[in-house]
Length: 308
Image 1: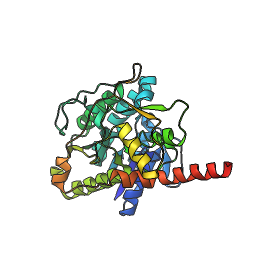
Image 2: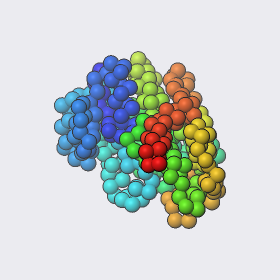
Image 3: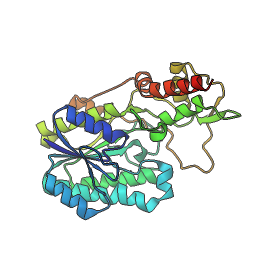
Image 4: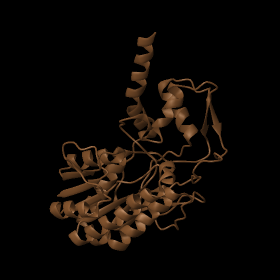
């Protein structure tokens, strides 16, 4: 089977490419600029190019993971975020319907307001920031233009990195490796259930396979996340314990930043729909984050030793 993965050079996209290739799919990745073997340069805002490539490839499956995903960046360029997260999604959904491709749209727990969790797949959405709004609108576009599509909501992600700030989880290591003078403050307010990208890729692939086995019974909105509920400060403490790093200089804060993009307080999601299908993948947070961050900690320690 042929699968097209958008955003294939990103944190999740790389894991999706790896997962589908290892399970025998023929994979084509769409990227905007970072072209390499097996990846095609396709600007998702160029409708003609998207139509041409998808029509030429005629994929059995499309996994639409490309997005403007950092809330601060979305607020900084809202028009571009709407074009990427909403407009391009509508086009891809329309083409998936035309080509009779199975479509998975990757969404987010930020479609919820964070009040009264856990949220079920059919709970009312009420995003409190623009990122969540554009992803919720992307869900609407997906199911409007391709009613048989699958929406997969996921939480904050981490995994094998190209740079520490590639994930809102792993960037937290910086306050332990390079503590600023006077210490630092990390939020101990918003609760998250971080997921390893390989788990999400596995869940996505399993969902596609279930869909191929039972097309009529597998569609609509699904949700997956890690099992540990942690604040950012909680994640920092886990990292400090794993790598035996000092953490006394990091202060927890339960006060929202006065000028930051609002974040929902607790977006824990109910994953029952996937579990009922027999779909699951869980990497314990300590194991996953240790494996992802160990090379960065070792590099930092080697650099310090060389400097001494």
